[in-house]
Length: 233
Image (cartoon, rainbow, N blue to C red; front, side):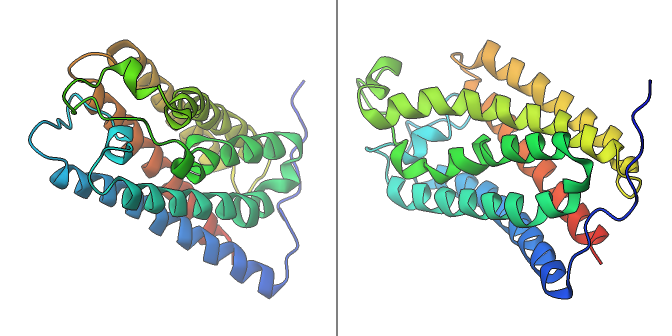
């Protein structure tokens, strides 16, 4: 039995609330662009031993990484922007869909781009694998490394799951139905990249696999933010 379609008007918002939805959607686009730009830039000051193909993004804000604290602060601010976008843009735009929208919003907020990035200052590994004598186990010797190893995989899974739930919410809203299938496909792409990263994470191309996943996630979030802004008039 097919679910009934919700009425087209997702949320009856005031002009002030509409402006807030659009403002945080724009902030999310800027935050994701900054997120990608700064970890690309940070690779330039990591020194000759660091490899963007083999080493992870987390290595660049480890305790021993040059400029690590700066990059951690930037990523933290990006996470805060995504959290505010989720609360003040995604939820108002889709909440008429009910439970799928609620679950999808919560999952997006707790994903690696939301809560995961917000806690970056507390997820700094003990050392970089690019440092002489630093092993994968050495990186987890401090609380930050252990927290990063725990939250990062869960955060990516939360992002993938959010895509499926948000797609289900969009399917129930006439104004969003055309975006449901692309959102679901994006979630499958992220799931595939997550699997690729799991297989090759410890190899010589682990850093490259992680970067592909990071760029894809940032692009998906940015496109969602653009659509929220475009459809909120």
